[in-house]
Amino acid sequence: MSDSKRTGSRDISELKQRLGLKKGAQPATGSTKTNGSGGVVPPPGLNLPPPPGMVTAPAQPAIPNAADDPFGAMNAMAAVGKVQRAPEIVIVNDGKPVENVGTKSMGATIARIAIPAVAALVAGVAVGKIGTSAAFHNEGRADLQNVLGEDSNPGPSTVIGLKANLLGVQKVLDDWKTANEWKPSKAFETKLEAAVIKLNVESQKWFKDKSSVDAEIAGKIYAFYGGVAEVRAMFATHASAARDDDKTYTKAGKFTGLEEASKFLTAEGQMKDGDNAFVANDQNSQGFRYAVLIQVPTDRDPSPFGAKIVELGPPVCGGDTSPNTTGRCPDDKPLTNFAYRAEPSEPWRTAPPARSSNDLVAKSLVLTFPGGVRDSLVKGAGFVVSDAYYSKRLSGLYERIRGKPDPKDPERKPVGGLIDEGNKLESSIKTILDQKKDRFTFFM
Image (cartoon, rainbow, N blue to C red; front, top):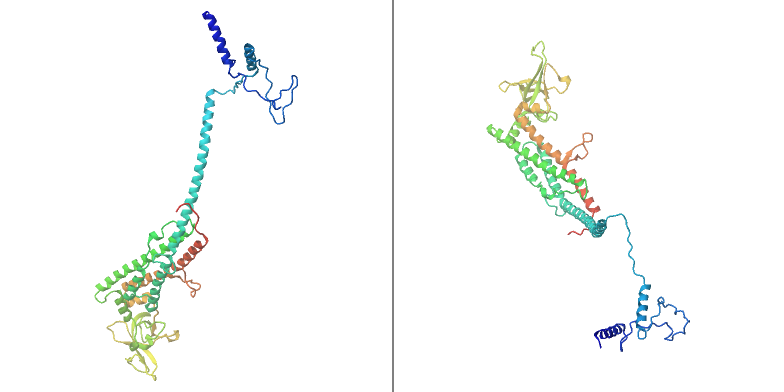
């Protein structure tokens, strides 16, 4: 057999093998489909409807048995392939360049990633701000409690503690005023210094900002603590000036400081019972030793009209011509004159005291009322200035702590002092702590 015949046989054998026509090969048409009639094939020309709920495939052209007609089967299979429509690709021109398609796709991808990230960031910032604000509020509230202090154990730098110490300073000044009207006194100076030292102002206790809790409380705290610092500064100024006065009067050799000079010079100008009981017990002049001699010229006494400052001496009683050295007149002898002299070296002269305008005669003695100028006649101008400023400094310190009295109502309790400010501050802080509680926060 020739090569061409062998080749043809081999080709037909391979074709049958591909088509499944060889013995034992499976047909190429696929599995047989049932029509839902239990395997019974309907007679030709009778098409039964499919059972309910069964989806049927579109009818396909009949394919001959490849064992009987291999070439017919091939043609039928090709026809089936032509019946099925190939997928179509529709091209649409939207007028945009091709590169824009990629850009839009990339922008959408970025947006899908960025939008949730930005939302999360905004939420995180909001939560962080809320938490920070709450933490700042809680910190300010706790700091307010530290500034206020506890009633049982307030601490020296708290509002309650400073108020108590201010009352201690006020008590020393009250006692001093009652005893000798704030005249120079070493004993009271020592007590006052010990009381002022207790006004301990520690800035780290109160210098934080409290506006997160209350907008006005910070200013009130600064004002009160500033006032306490002012009181300490006022006392420091007073103590420095008093030391300078002490040095001045100690150098004079006659006194040992301003207190000794004040006592001596005050005693020098004060009349005693043994000298003249009438003057010593006079409430208007407060026992001042010096008076004014009124002179009116007459025919018998041509002295010039005017007044002269004189020193008073003992009284002259009844018809006596000489002063009574006991300072008093006997019950049977009324007071008629006072002894006086215009110079320490002059002898004593006598003149009647004038207690009303009817008693004014050619020569009569008029007692004087207290005053700085009057006191300077005895004590000297320098001492009067030192003494007056000494009392004035203490008076200013007293008013800063206690407050000034109302000129329209002197009996009313003074207001506006540092203690009054402390009472109001304490009340404000307690109200804030009661009304504004701690806030929840994520921060510890």
